[in-house]
Image (cartoon, rainbow, N blue to C red; front, side):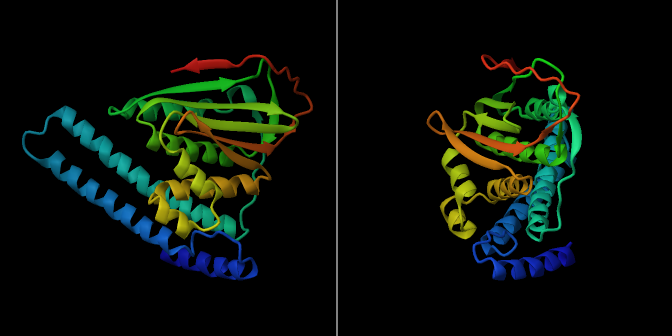
Length: 270
């Protein structure tokens, strides 16, 4: 892994010399220091919960809770490094879209099931998942589903981090040959997410909001959307809630018939 990071760092250094405005994570010392801190924090948690699981008198309920905490810490570490490395790979120009034909009626089904499972394990949260779509017929488009899912997953994780009670809404619509997806929450992370989304200097932004996890998530999401030829923007939802929208160009499969309900959305609360 260290050799991979070193190779990416060399390529990104050359890219940054050619483009002084490039906002690269691999060359951001605050990001690297923050990742080191995050990793040590989660490793300490894994060790602590492993010790608690092995102590005498630990009942089955406690073991399950400790096991979930260990799994969560492992997922946080893996996700952090995956996002960091994938963002760095995109910066080298060695990543391309992988387009596939997808049915819009069920494009997010697996991802939403994953989100519901995540929420069901959060015993300390009181968060409702709301889904929206505006399709009334079978519609197929050519899209890069894996990278779209990656963006939505990152945005959902950020919403989850900043929303302890209330709701997280995930939805999408098709208009003018563009798919627009959105993740809206009632949490407390708007100003932090806005800073990381619009920043030209990650070092400076991290001095204002010391949250490496969110910074890495949003930076990768932004780079993936740019790679797909799309756009992203953020709105305040209420006082401090966050609404992040991103649009990407898609091609409608010729055989698809499309009927869009322009007047109302289908909404499901889980």
